[in-house]
Image (tube, rainbow, N blue to C red; front, side, top):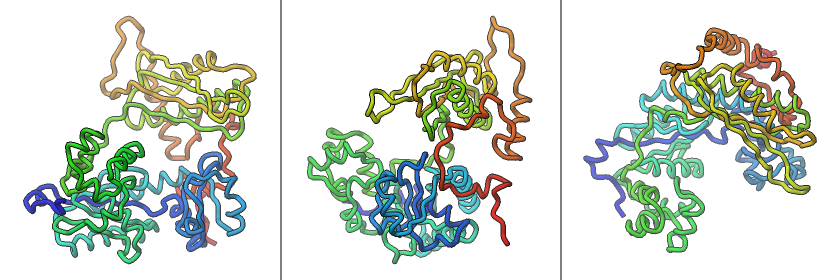
Length: 431
């Protein structure tokens, strides 16, 4: 297997680094509550259903990712684990701060997820690259109080593997390098194929049937066999493991195809007014994102979910989709369309447990298309602009439509920490 890029190729393409915040949700909670440092901590999903984040101390107790809370409640209480409801307002704002700081430090950044970002670095010696990574880690800790790990490699896939190793090996100081010219066989032989970025469970089963169980096995595999038995994506992953870059930086996020917002309810909803209030709240969130990105929606889908037969765990979803003519981003117009859909969907006596909205057919607001045979609607942009400005300044829902005021549907969040960074009334107080 090739262990490095040819020098000329490496000089043209540069190197990739992957920054990943350690146990991000837990780390966000620790920023504002230092007493949590060194304590086992877990964060729960919506409605306090499952464990979705764990501190290293909680992992050491054998608490699994995704395990239902009720199954481990006694274990958590016995070990005095601190339990938090998910606080997505806090996590989202801390993510924005991480990415803003990273973009101020490095010119080429691709935001990959809420707590991960790829960075393009110039080809340099190991010592210089480690210093760059260490400076980024130090800035994240000093300015935001967040611990991060950084993996470097000739390709995105190798950077992913390096990042995983940086988390596993404390001796590396949170940094791991898989650089051109170095032999990576030992680490790739310890990395399972299921742990390789882009290899799903189905592909892993097919690889295992062919005797390919590690990242090294995949890198050494016959190219024709991989293409024939798997896909072109797996063939690219094989090349990436060899140090041949196939995945470029995406500094400009691809245009959105849709904007969605949904929630599971804390308690079942049986009243039409309560279901309408939930859907209108979701629409307000989606429409706000629509206007922020200067887009118009040409299509609206509303769906609701309820249990089927007694004892059935899966939700049965019912949906309706309507075309919006003309396309728009006016919350009031979207509410009218959603209200008409809900009249069709709602069934008296049914217990609804989830609802959501999807805005699709997105087009730039600057390219608004008029309607030849319909009168032009009254311009809503000034009103929506004022609403967004007030809510940005004084907090979400400072001004909202009355139909969305009912909040009986809110998810259970009995253990949620304050919105330290996004609500004036919940700012931390120093005494």
